[in-house]
Amino acid sequence: MRVIVVGSGVVGMTSAWFLAERGHEVEVIDQGSGSALGASYANGGQISVSQAEPWSNPGAPIKVLKWLGREDAPLLFRLRADLRQWSWGLRFLMECLPTRTHDNMLNILRMGLFSRRLLQELRDSERLQYNQVTKGILQIHTDEAEFEAANVRLASQLEYGLDMSICSRDDLTRIEPALAQSSVPVVGATYAADDESGDAHVFTRQLEEACKRKHKINFVYDTKVLGFLGSNDSIQGVRVETKDGMSAVKNSDAYVIATGSATDALLRPIGLRTSIYPVKGYSLTIPVIDPSLAPEVCITDENGKVAISRLGDFLRVAGTAEVNGYDLSVNDSRCEGISNRVKQLFPRGIDYENARKWAGLRPMTPSSVPIIGGTRYANLFLNTGHGTLGWTLSCGSGAAIADIVSGKKPEVDFSFT
Image (tube, rainbow, N blue to C red; front, side, top):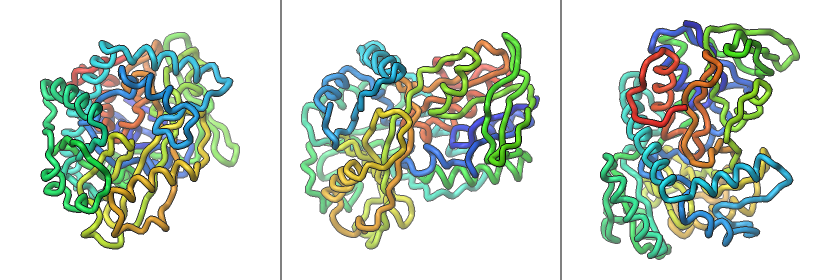
């Protein structure tokens, strides 16, 4: 079967790979000049199955209210005259109910465990190298009450196969010696030994080469999908336009949409709605000048809301969330807040003055659960809305959508659409 995948980020690329592995003839279309130039370009780098708790949880509403108007807030709602933003916000609040949070967490956790296994298998089979580090993730806490709440969540997650343990202060410096220089008052931590990190952009580019080499997948860049052609129950083609203004129609047997934050705008003209809204996140890529003083193990500062990953000779630090429409401007104040927090953890050995700043749009659903599955159009499928966990869930969701397109039941237990 011929399949067009729209979107060449990490989710689109894994979708293309697994579709081709199942014997389909695949073409990938993207409006950018190459793969992984959007949300996959400079994300936090973590394969963080241990961070399966949704953003929408019982403690979130109070925090959001407390942070309103604070420029350095970890999660900042910039309220706009935007009906979609307000609608998304109301649905976010509904998903904060304890029962919804629990169900959503299990969905994310099951997909995360499945996805991490497939990533490891794919890495080994195709000999991919993307500055991966397989030393786990340390989640540190500076608030006693939040640490106790994390322990309660941990007990629930352990029941479903997550390997995670509680750490003492001595454990911290044993697992990551560079933390000995930290001035952050850590009250407790957990350690997910099986979690990983790596450069999602490099991974996606390497997987693209594997797609071309092994499966002869065709990649079409600088080409924007303008809309769909079809009847009430089937899509017959997509209208596209190249950067030089040339228009064409591309036909296929099936279509997979992996367009992240652009998904809703793309689908609305054919009567489909998605609960995806862009949430801007920031990252800094900082040169390491003394490897002995920089961390190798991933660190997640739960109270500072900062993720830290070692990518070769650089440190990738990412954090904050800004609900502000499709604005991609880089806010220096928010970047400075991230940098200042990391300096408290690792004051030496890192060249903070030469940090590269970046902002990207995370495609968030109110529940934090991605949208994976079919639509009312028999040959149109969605693999989108992964939020902060696109890198973590990419291989699992790519394999799952490939099974669904192929008419098979996915291996993973997940609430597919």
